[in-house]
Image (cartoon, rainbow, N blue to C red; front, side):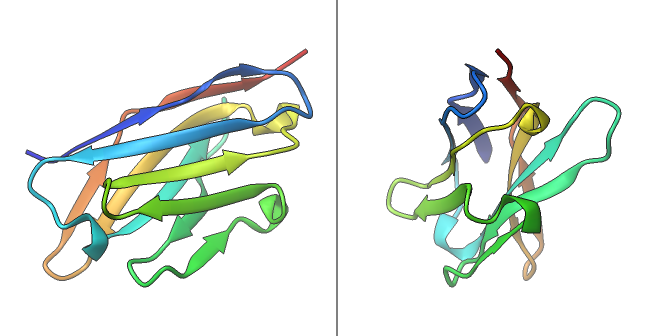
Length: 118
């Protein structure tokens, strides 16, 4: 059974940094998956934060470029989101996702809270 377990969330002051990680376990070839971080703020729709494909191609929400960085370690089966210069509006529940199109598999981690507040 495949599981994605996120860690690293918490409370941080505006301007601070936080590093989220998500560890995959179970029977999966992690390197075959595109991995993505999403977030959902209270009262708002879920949005894609950053993704990194199996080929290593990254994609970011435009407003986050330059502040957030996504990476992956296929050997350790982990994905990481480095968040810098955090703003109050970055407050949300963050979700990690690993997806493969063929054959189709789509796995989600539990949400992890990130709160940016003074």
